[in-house]
Amino acid sequence: MPRNNMILIPIPLLVLAVFPMPYSFYGVLRAIVFMAACTMSEQHYRKMKDWNGLALAYACAALLFNPIVPAGLSRASWFIFDIGAAALFYYSWTQSGKTGASPTTIENPVRSDDPPADA
Image (cartoon, rainbow, N blue to C red):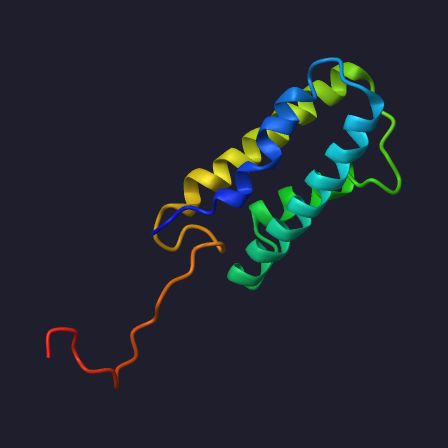
């Protein structure tokens, strides 16, 4: 199954965030990570039909990186959260290539009334 490469978009931005950047970069970063985390949380919730660990982790990341009410944390705290969020997105990307491991993996179900492939 192909991997969902859209998950990779926030990773380099989160890694860049550990370096001194203009303030506008962090605003854009918050918006991108917020949207990606909301999407991933919703997809994991829909797949499992319940709040599993990854759905909750992405929901927490969305709250932390929300652009409307920014969290006022120290630079050292943001370093940890930036790296942690990048690791979370990377983990989901590595799992998206495995069959049935990610809600972003689209599977073709085989119905019982379908003729065999070799017929």
